[in-house]
Image (cartoon, rainbow over all chains, first blue to last red; front, top):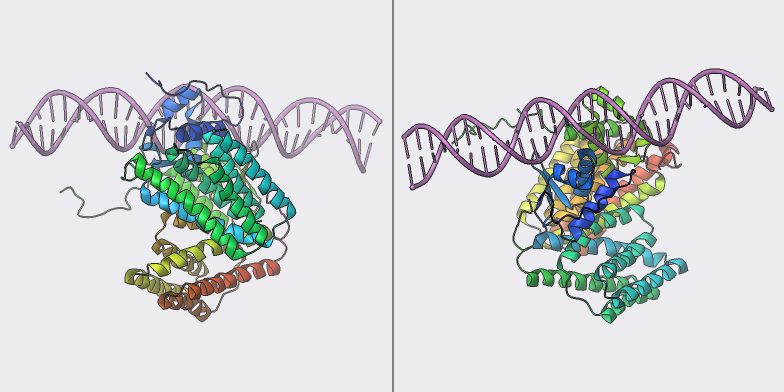
Length: 236
Length: 236
DNA sequence: AGTGGTAAAACTGTCGACAGTCGGCAATCG
DNA sequence: CGATTGCCGACTGTCGACAGTTTTACCACT
């Protein structure tokens, strides 16, 4: 009864314990093996994973900086729970970053960037057709990450990566319904077309629409799934 | 009623070693007690501070997530060194965030926000007149933080706070020359005027100019101070 | 003198242990 | 019967120690 739900497949290699624990925790949180607001016991985790508490603590601090955990002094670490307002904030910041990125990108749209993005859309379509929800989300995020990457600002990319962790949380928490594959495809093709046109205004319009759809999708999901994220359940 | 009539909040200092170490390291880095690219020895730090290595490691990881330190596996932590490109990136992201913030702010510009910002400009002018460089920088950053705060997006504010740590590094590294106090004042009054006008375009123009000046100031400083940040001295 | 190899020193990653603190439960008092 | 207080278990914060690795210093050899 020490750890019934947690998979005891923790055969951890000898190197980079912190990163491995961080990855394990990230996956566990995203896949909802830990509920939002749930408290994580350091001793229990270290027992389950077969490591000492030091790497667990450092990994937890890493996840805290990524917004997946919240630490309360003398109380421990808790799984982050997002309420509706925080959800809106996340998508608003995403819009902020991606607008800026696509404006930079359209000014330096190289054939290499074009090719990379088109290739990624292909991967995305493939994933969407395969009905693998997790993979679809990852390919989608990867497309946007590529946009940020080719925008030529490493710091901007880092800010996006930071946000991505919370974004994954939002999306995976909600997404049970499946978008139609062709919807996804056209939605991203519009971005490529806007970039091809070379018009900043067209790019802005495209990215606003694109992220607006994603936001509405998630926000609607919250409304449907219930008040779980609407109320302030242990968000602090 | 318990004995909370008096609020002795400064009594308990014995807690939070990690934060104390993090603050110490932050100050030491900003004040250049550690040179950019320099390696920090955990044992030496723990000896100097009279604590064990565990809190030092956790504090170092915190600073790493803030972009002040860089960790190389099995090698330790190194003080972050910014080259010219990274410097440009930082200011580009700052522009991105503040544009978005001021656009949000002008749409919900309450009298409270207006009063808070005006008050902060007063503090800033005062600091500028006092010739205390560090305090001037802090009051300046605080003004911008207030803008972000009243923009009504907590996540946006957090992104700004994350960036602020690097911003402090850039600014403090360079700023030896003093801006004229009235220059600072007018520069911020322009922002207030743009907000009063209620015009998003005016706000954008004001913030672009404002941050452009700051960026040029720092970049010029880099050019003058020498190639210290221009070359890729231990930036990785 | 320059080079290659080896051994020692120092450092990081990790571990188990100890002390102080927090939350909950029960006994006590009004 | 309800509120308060003291106690108990569990947990976090911190520490010192050990093992493996990297760096450095030194020495032999060309």
